[in-house]
Length: 238
Ligand code: UDP
Image (cartoon, rainbow, N blue to C red):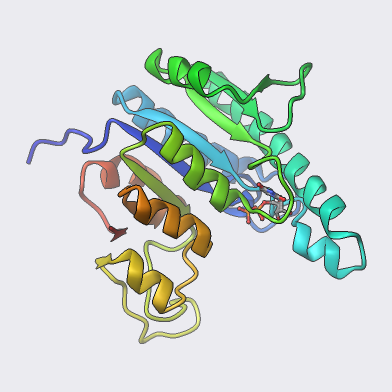
């Protein structure tokens, strides 16, 4: 088979844990290294990459709000956490010779660029990885919704959701040995069965714009490129 990537431009969504934190609070150097090596490989293969990293390895709004903090303040802290993760990924990618730009939905002049759609498109055309930080810049949302919106705005061919498991299962494969992996799923199935792959709002935005979601493991070295070439193990939602 010709091993050319199937997609020209993708948006890669990683949770804070899967992307940079591992099982620890803050940054786990090994997890970060695996993540950026995966990204570097596909950039070298000529794929244009947009990246959205969550903040759950540092702060998650709902968790903070459960301690009694006002929800919007908690969510802003969560958004700031995603900016820290974006800078960590940027620094690691640049050490590997990959050009990057961070664009934040909350303008932060001294730290990174503000989100400007047309400028982001230009960066992609030049082969730079664009890391979208601070989610949508609004509380009560998550970085899944931000990933879906940016994927649509950037005209991505697919939204890649990297997790610690290699696809979507009928049950949690870490707890249920009889859990089976789906090869493909419809958007409708994901929503109706409440499979919680991504937020419902993110899934419906992808459905309305006909952008497939590819769920795969980011923990396995070399896997992202394999999945992009249509090999390896993953679940496609379309
Ligand atoms: N967040 C927000 N609006 C956004 C994106 C994120 O309020 O548009 C906050 C929210 O509190 C969330 C936190 O940032 O819990 C971290 O993002 P998320 O939970 O999506 O991270 P992940 O689970 O992907 O690591």
